[in-house]
Image (tube, rainbow, N blue to C red; front, side, top):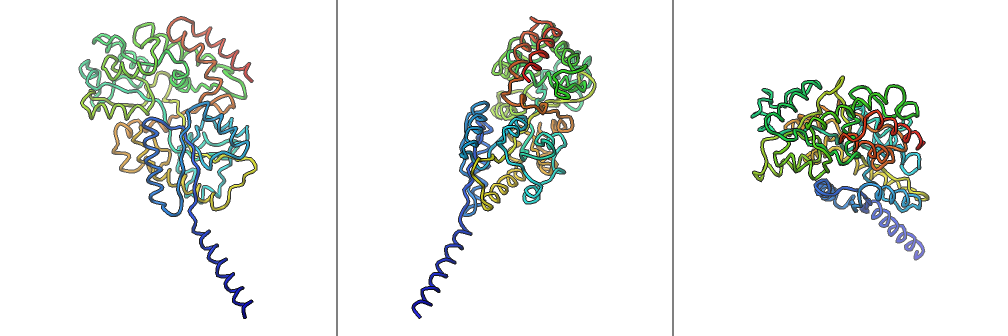
Length: 425
């Protein structure tokens, strides 16, 4: 009898332990590289997720330094099984990460569990997280460059269309006429561009290459065939604007923003992440009427460089993720995608289609105006040398800066770039 009671008591205790384990809260270790306004917004999303999933899942988040430091830490940590459960990752870095074996595949079963699918994303965005037919991240946004404009200055110069956009967005001749019109109206430099930073200017240059159907890499070779000529064409246009005083010279990032927000330069090419800056200044009564649109068509058709913040799962060496942990991670990624409307307040375009198609998003300005860019996006070439802080940027930046500022001929710059890029392989 005592033996039977003991066995029964043991079964009760065991059942209690298993019940407790089944209801145990999963802690998801999270790393990101988001600072400034992005960081503030992501922290809010994490807080909202934790509140909604109280007692079930909690995100334990850490923010690390953006760029090379972040990706170096991910690689070394994953190699010893000490990486996070989930992390933010630039889509442009995925080919390198896959070659290093540090990302887990997001399997078809994972997508089904998350309630997400290829149909929910723009083709270019989906392709950006795909390597050899497999997906390695869940896209969260796209963050292209756009053309910011001073509506007041354009209206005063008679260069604003009836629908409140700059004139001349559909051709090189038209856009250059707008630049010259603004100069005649008194703007010393009509267009503010970050011409002191070739890495940043890659975005504009690559966009103009894409408008000619140019590719930085094809069949494993950089600037093969007529792609070198297309890069030269892009550089020649931008250099011409500088030489004619239509674009700022040797201007760093803060100065570019300052020239636009002060009203000195009525136009600016910059990332969508500056939208919150403009909104805040306008609400404070410190900014003119403004807008943001897709880049002008300088060559054959619209094309704009973009990258994507995405969520990835590191392949932590020797550390298999439990089924419970995996379920929690998938819930985090799914929830973030479906609740990304708030992320749009950072200027980014949510990658999840049902959000950008919603009435709430379509009512956001200027976001809804420039969201058309998702139909014309081009991402970095799929190369282990590409992506944020990748070596191809270092090579090109060396030649972009003097060329854009009129101190080197485009043809010479392209010749040097082509040689050095192919020498990296």
